[in-house]
Image 1 (cartoon, rainbow, N blue to C red):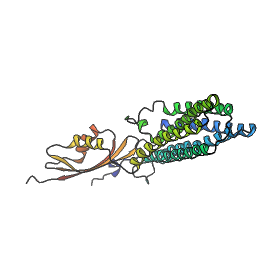
Image 2 (image 1 turned 90 degrees about the vertical axis):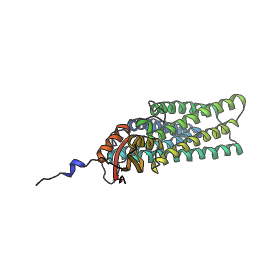
Image 3 (image 1 turned 90 degrees about the horizontal axis):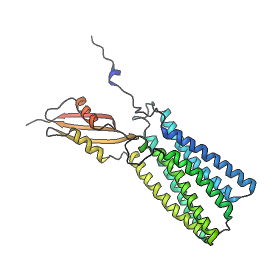
Image 4 (image 1 turned 45 degrees about the horizontal axis):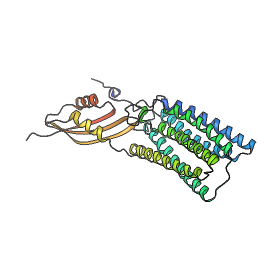
Length: 304
């Protein structure tokens, strides 16, 4: 009597999520830099009685929280990669971390707009030298942080895991937003100090907030498409080109993301002379390497 072991036909659903991603280490370094800058500014603000230093330190703290969420998302995905409660692994934790970071970025932009409008209505005296010093230090720290997170990051249209790392992209946009606000602040403060244009400080705040809102909105769109299983049209075309001919047609096709540049698919085929599902699977995988999990249903269509 033959005995068959089901394990030969089973496989896990980890899809590389148990590996430490490059973005995790880089984000952790940036968290350390941000926290160091935050503590230094808060202590300096208390010791020297500078509200500018104290306020900027607390502001850095809000971004440290957002970056901490990104680190948590990386570690949660890695440590739970083998958890069978996640049907297709923990790849979407990456997108969820990016979505959360994008929401926080939008909230930060809204706060900037409200604060800038208030400064127009109720202008306050600015200690230019102290404020410029803080802005320059902040620009240096955030510039280094952006370089750490952005190096080898490439464009969002790339085809590697890093290029689709929404969690890392969220962290990158947070430090880039900080760097942008510091740069705009330096320009506005110099204009205020030497030309008397104090109105430029809140005006630059609004300009920066608008740019940050655009970044946040784009990240919200990209991550929500992953979270809501929006089907990639270009991948659908590749699957159809790989399998369809005069004898074989796809009757039903579902493709969704299960991680950075990794996708799953359920494909229903109709053929006059059908082959085995394994044969069709090999054809699709030869053309669509990003499909990590494929389920194929084959139905026979009578010739008459």
